[in-house]
Length: 395
Image (cartoon, rainbow, N blue to C red; front, side, top):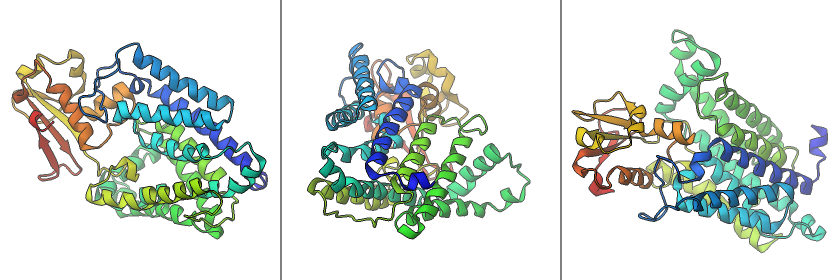
């Protein structure tokens, strides 16, 4: 740990840049069908009706993204990083399903590296600490809001028991299961990690808490646990790297308006607005859950597509694999879109109504009769009034 504390700021930034690029490439490899268009699962472009890229153009774009990542891994250059962010933005514009939380955080973490040439010795000395301050602003927001969103009954009733059963093999009769309010302790720890990163005196303790938490998450989504979302393993490794290299042993005070560089000053202020304040809008469903770090709370909608018999004759027969046991529709079947997304793309559905509509448009196309299709977005618990029903005309 002493060697880590003595690591100079510039070296920390170089290592972080390489680690993020390597782990982003790993995440792409795990979720490869997400990054091209030759799949059954529909794309959700940022502009409704935007045609998808035909093969081989989608594979060429994917190759360009991978190539730029490889360049960034090989060399740290401002132009390479800017090119990577441009490729990421284009990929998300073509399909919002790619705006997974790990992609969002990677983009934000890499963004300030495009603002100045860090190969200049004078620039390095001037911007090193403000850049780490920027990363600390990011980390504070991620942990604070991720913890705060878990102070809900749905987390206690659904996620907390799954964690106990999957990772710790706790049985239903255990006192831990009977006293589920203890799950609020896990939410409080995550929130306190975010607050602890603000203050130099508590920063190292907060870093250690974050590392332990991420190791538990990695165990949960590994073969030791029972969670199928293993695409987040590289992301959790990246978060460990970010919090350790970005905060451990650093005694700087966080400034939302650093004096070192005009562009970095505005970038830090904008990041604070985006990461510290905008997530509050998600409490009223006016900001995306993933952009608010509302994760593993069961407060995000799960989408189902109900199809009557006539529509069932028109869909891809492979979708029968994802039929759910549900009574949403008479004389038909229900597709569990979350199950479909995990099985084909290895990521969850991006939980936003506009993405749900894009998926709905896939089923509302000709020759399917729109009257044969019903779309339902459920929130936990599955009770009356906790769901939204919409039809083809709404898409």
